[in-house]
Each structure stands twice: as structure tokens, then as C-alpha cells.
Length: 277
Image 1 (cartoon, rainbow, N blue to C red):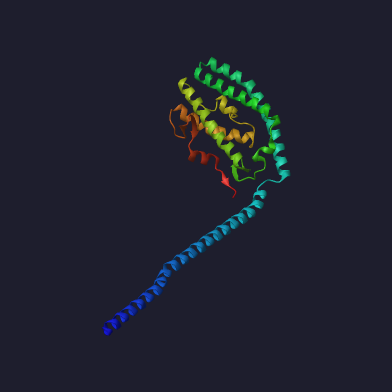
Image 2: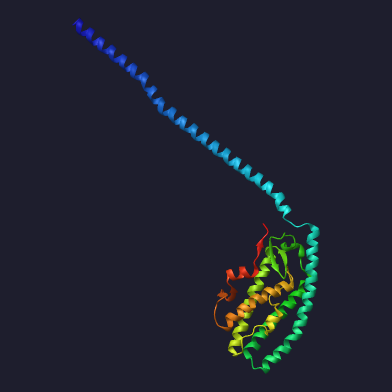
């Protein structure tokens, strides 16, 4: 009996010892996931801080580049003296062009009468439309007396192209280059209409006798380039347009968005602009 009691006491002591061991070991295993989560949180925080630092560095570098680019932008403007020189030349050009338009308007009726005598009805109608466009340009020139030259970027933008014409080189910026392209395209469109009119009238092929070819001012606003240069490139487009219109084909140009324009490769060869940069 005493032996049974001793056995029971021994078993109870063993159970209490095991429970105490289990109780002390559970928290040890539970702490490991908590420590891992804490380390992951620290890594995420460090990664976010690193991204913020990198973004701040990029913003600082971008600001430095912008700061360095500002002096270059200032240098790209022409000196004030050169701007005033261009404005003076432009004002003189407008006066001369206005006088030229007046003279051409006086000559137009004489040629119109001759077309009527020759029975060239289609060509007569084309010339009426052409001279109506010149009268509109004349009004535009008269309204240019109060032109805001200071707000026109042409007069403070340095030259970026050069082109060869009449034994010398000319320099111009993108605004002047645009007018050169317009001259060729305007000439082509007017030439196409003139050639088509002569074909309708069953008249012999001859673009040189056309009033439009001789005038060559259609579409010229008097700005950015010399009138003689505009006339030259207008005639280059006109004779090609006349040929296409007379023979009812599109060798040099295309009909696009309601207008006749010179093909890009042909336009490039005619003007032959060379970049200065």
C-alpha cells in the first residue's frame, strides 16, 4: 500500500515537471515568427527610404539640368541690335511689296482683256481668281502697319538653315524656311490650275505667258524672306504644277486634304535647305 502511494507521488512529480518544461518552451518558439515579421518590416522601411532618397536625387539632378539649360536658352535669342535690324528690313520690305502689288493690279486688266479676245474662257476665269487673291493680300499689307514685331519669334530666333540662290547663300530660321516651302506649294497649286485651264481651252502648252507665272506673288505676305526669293520658288512650283495640270497627271505633286501640293522629295530638291547645326 505504501508502495502504491510512493508510485503515485512519483508519477505526479513527473507530470508537474513536464508541464513546467512545456510552459517555458512555448514562448521561445512563439517569439520566432514575431522577430521575422519585425525584420521584414524594417527591410520594407529601409527600401522605402532608399526609394525616397533616389527620387530626391533624380529631382535634384533634373533641377540642375534645367538650371544649366536656362543660360543656353537665353543665348539662343538674337541680340537686341540684330533684332532691330531685322525689323527695319522687314518694314522696308513691306513698303516695297505694297508698291509692287499696286503695279501688278494695274497690269492685270490688260491681260484679262487679251484672254477674252483669244476666247480663253477657262484661263480668264483662273486669272480672275488669282487677282482676287492678290487684292486680299494687298489689304493684309495695309493692315500690317501696326504689326507687333516684338511678339513674333522670327525676329529673335537665330538662323538654323541656309540655301543657295542666285550665286549666293542665304540664311534663315524655321519661320523663313516655312515660307520657302509655302512658295513652292502655292506655285504648284496655281500652276496646276493654270495648266488645266489651258488644256480646257485647247491652248498650246506655255506656262511663261501666264500672268500668275509672271507675277509670282500669290500667297506672299511680305514677311521673313525677300520677295525675289519667294518669286523664284513660286515659279519653280508653278512650272511643275502647270505641267501636271496640263497633262492631267501627278508627276511632281499630289492632291491632299483639298489642296495640290508638291511631293516631299521634289520639294526637298527644289529648296535644298542645309542645316547650320
